[in-house]
Image: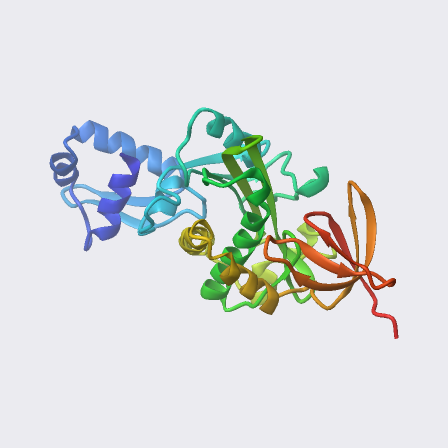
Length: 321
């Protein structure tokens, strides 16, 4: 109901009477007042004038569900949104909801995280109200072995959303990071619940530094605000991401992963670089040649042998002169 009242106020030309909202929404005038009061507590500046009604003055800088969904116009991505002031981790909450049967496209976001995490158990710094910290639930009809492309697909969707909303060009550091001017601006984490031959659901977590200040970041990181030198509307970026995500996910489900690969190759921070990659099987070092058809990274070692890695921790080394 809060979302419908906000929509009413946003679409109004001037003041809206409580009686008008009461009649249209089929609730009492007292209920209208109660919801208005709740919205004010969420940070909405709503002016109330006797005999005129209510007028929306300004919006809060918060990742609220009804703000994310307002004007979103997606078919399923973000049609169900859970927003929290604080969570230990949006990944944990998304996994819990996934186990309870939450529909595909469900979004979980938080203003801050106390135990935000990235790959390999690393922590993700989540300064309150500064970034986009979210997890999405997907239910693809794919085999567990077909999951690696989803991480690259998410990186492409996020890069596209940043370009559309800020004009910033980012590059993809295989397999799950986005960089601007060689500094990390976003990370992606993919986890799944699966059986041997069936994926139950996938949770894709995204951490994006939006309005994070330099003193809140590691030296190797950056934010959209730092790069543009202005405050960025987090809702606009996130909505663009959800729209882009729905399009690219549809392509992957139709077997059109080549379009994702083409983008990754053109905007890669890894291909043609001398790298060292570490995974559970050990280290591999050499020149990153290409991203294979299934999302794996092809590396030519000094011996000339080409190895493929499906995941791992990548370090870019200085090219030998």
